[in-house]
Length: 381
Image (cartoon, rainbow, N blue to C red; front, side):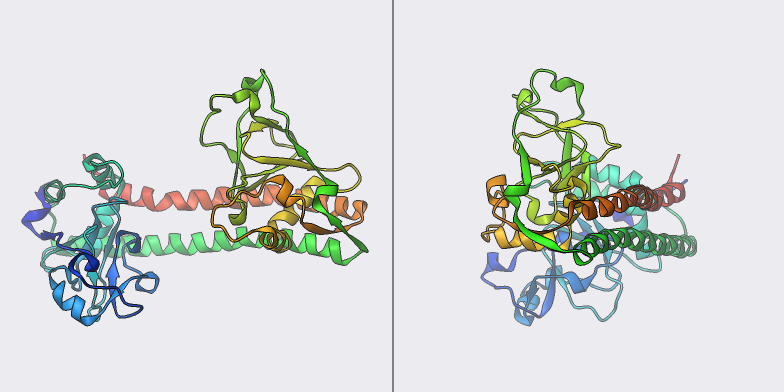
């Protein structure tokens, strides 16, 4: 297929700046001032923009004023995000992390170009161009040298229309799968709440009904997988054991554990009966319910429910990244239903796991589809 360098059909501009660098200030409202993080997907979602400038600043910074049809590319920070200005009624500006591609629309369709540059082949190019450490960036000359298919505008429009329709169907499927996954969380919360409402409860201090797992695994740490806690629950740890792997804590079925620096955002995990016994970071807090007092699976879902969130927030001191160690969690209060009621609810909660796993796999598959579609469309030999 015949190709052409992108700067042969378009002007690629990076003249943005930060208003404060020339003595201007941001406004609470006014003209949107786009940064790299505001660009996600083929169109810019102006409802999520958090920074604005006033009319005076916009006039001074008019060299980085955006126009209808401009294709935006992030060239600093998170490299290679692609979007475009899809409305003729938008007045906006951008900072130095954003370059824009401006081309005659009778030659290049902005949606087609957005989708092309979003495809894996071109995203790999952006990754190859990256230099710098703390703030990754790319040289504008490299972007100008990118070669794109030299096809007629009519063909571009047909490709863009087909892709938009396909990606819209994928997004519809993604939202439906996300709703299904969300419903399992709501169902879990409902089971926990019902177990509390249907029987007499007793208020307990968490430290009196939970047992902390403190001892390390010892010399046989290599025999076990390393588990971590995420917002979604149990997951393989991102990092291997550090200098003292013997200190990693054993987490067998029935163990609840959490990242004390991230419990406020839900990084809590549970090792269920069908999960492999493993180890987790000595920095994590690991615990189990005391025999005949707390069913650990029930407690895990309680801790992730609005009731657990309320308890955690009541113990927090306001710091963004504070450590919620066991001695702090132990001060929390819990309304405990009778143990046999907990166990009945626990069995119902156990049945949600395969359902949730199926929805997660479905959602993961759907999330891969845009990449596959773009690859199939734009793959060039």
